[in-house]
Length: 198
Image (cartoon, rainbow, N blue to C red; front, side, top):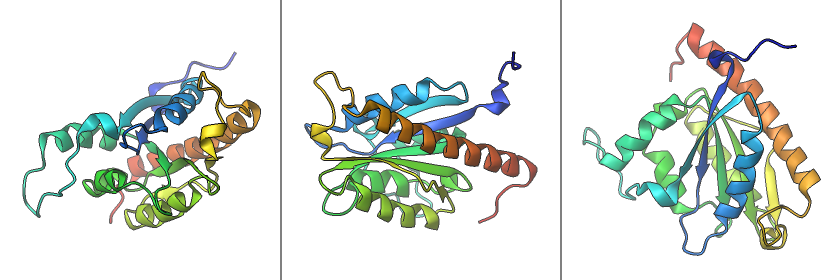
């Protein structure tokens, strides 16, 4: 029998639900994904749904105090060892509230891995992911190569919110999370040995 997992061995994963749109499909995708992540013994989950957080869309000026809503989110991101962003694709990109949430923070992202779950029409949200990779690279984060994407997402789930191709998408989620845990562990250990400078 393997020894019980120590708290240090667990990766604190912040799952960011990036859509705030009225009538959004995001909760269906997010509920499925978080259930996959919760089944793992190596992850400690914190779900941040931007629709519930009330982050302002106007950034504070340099030296200005951020809003209370930002102050509530910042320590949760700072405490995370890794992130998964769940995003739709709007006009070949990702939602504006997601960009604002990213831009409210800087050091919280550094030297940490970011995975992606995307959804949309024919493109499956992959164009949003490609743009997010550029943004997170600028923030000194490491993006995970393998993603989970739902093409024609609205027809990929049944009335109970379960994916029709459960074996395929559950396998994709496992692959991405395996890679995320590897990077999360490696970078967590590296940050403990030497603070990351940016």
